[in-house]
Length: 102
Length: 393
Image 1 (tube, chains in turn orange, yellow):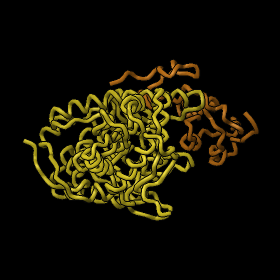
Image 2: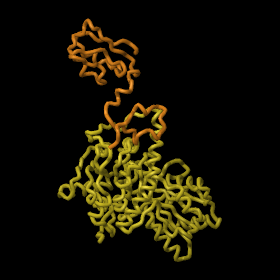
Image 3: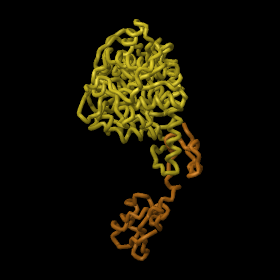
Image 4: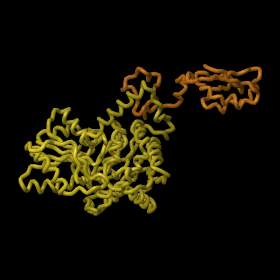
């Protein structure tokens, strides 16, 4: 069985011999190392005065970018949020608004 | 003792599948390959093998399911022809770039336009750049033998590429011929169990298959595919050498028939090679030094070896059973000529189209090509690029 792929060693300067066959990546959770939030054209912003920590937003986030700690949501993980706006739609308290840009 | 039988090409491949007993076979019927999944389904229904058969709604799905099964860690295969292969197109490239070992039994048939169900190579030739290994059979025996070797080559750690085992539709797939089968225990021992190092269903080591490759990664990925294809050359020969030990039958990149001292030669692929051999025997009886190079392995393309084998002939005809509409040659013709150019082999060469859409290729057809070649060889005729065999004018 292969070792987990050390994806910190695969980057845009890697020679072809450093890539795995078929670019297969062994070991889970690699996506968190890639800051794909830069694709965003709209950004969700939380109004903490309105947020009731009902946690409706967390499970609908396709990129797991709404972390929860001790039963309360924390601020967005902007390194991975793509700005899809689903959290804004699902929020019953108007606590999330989408602003233009990053 | 090997088993003497009589079988059609489709039966021979289905029998090989039965002997190998692979894990998963998704398939969708299409003439002339339909019998292969049909016969395998019968083996499963009779309890002779425990392959998981997945009836799917299309070839796009059969290839997708075969790839999914392979990624999951199963030994997987499918079968198709013509438009069925065309409908797999998108996935063919993905199977190769994801480096998924799997086998496709292809029964060559003309691609529609105009609609036609007969043999030619336009389906697999169109897929020649997809990154698959392609091996062609002359007859039922070779269809069987190639299939038994297929998984060993495809699954080899230095290769890990999908494998297209090609035979000519109807001519080979439906004609019943004598065949020598290998005992099942020997086949099983030869093919071996499939225990991939990494696979999706391995809970110990999660795995991502087919990640997005941006431009900084795409070219390097293609280079690695190319290296795997290059590695396949050695593996194909190694597996053939091992196969010879259990079968007594010898295979290489191509077969040379009376080519050693030949002055005129035909390069051809598939069932028409047998017809060409008959023509050669008749010409040799008249003292004409005719020979044949029958390409077995088209991908990886054994260009250097072909050029070396042809370097002493005076004129060569490369026969294509598929158009490529470059308006200056067919796929086999272009590659053989390019290989000769690279090797500095300056032999007069003509590219012919033959047998397209199932047009008969007879001993007379082959003889007429040799007659042209003899005129080209003695300088009384200029090589014309390209010509048709049997075109009505």
